[in-house]
Image (cartoon, rainbow, N blue to C red; front, side, top):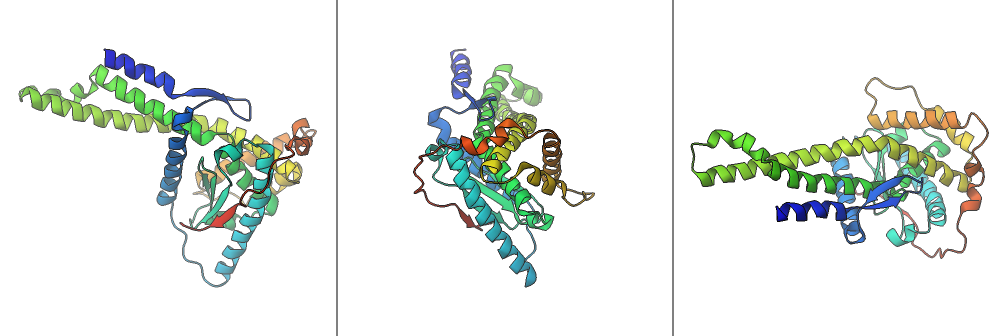
Length: 306
């Protein structure tokens, strides 16, 4: 029982409440674990990249188009990164710069990590987005970093994992899977029960964390959209131009990736917002830039390690 109480208390001290840039209360890891949070989110991003289908090798004109796309990402990324650091000066305490990566992946998509890495899949080029729409794709992914969504996801995973390791042994779940070993020696039964409990707890914590993160995803996407639109306005883009270009996405394909459908949903929500008068916070976005920051930081970069 003392061990149970000690572990239970650790669950409450693992997380702290914070307020996201959108005003939403979110769980984040305490300061001692924030370094781990960055590493974990980087690993999670690499896992997404490893499991995504590779794009075929380019040839001649395709290679030229790919290089031109890389340069567009670099130019748009620099413009947005400068605005992001001006709007959110606390970013400088978390990482020195945004790093933009173009990954040779067949389907459209994007990923990021808490350390400021933003990955755009090669398949996005084939959506033929204009600059305003492509800037929104970059800004929305950057906004997941700005909004602390990766830290929130990591904290959720940690809490679920700790809770599973506490509750499953206490409830003796492993005995359900090793009850048939009653005729064996007591030591063998205890060992098999412990193994079964650990395996079930690990599987449950993985499934549980994924389910909770999936339930948080719609809120995070909407918050990222709002942060992105303010960033775009501050960087000089007109909200209605962004909306018009996003609405110009090519018709959906039968086997469209979930990421592209999510982008279409963002386009629909933004188009709905742009129907009425321009929101006050969007009109005054340029005035929200924090002046007087030191901008001798290293510039953002584009690389292709994947």
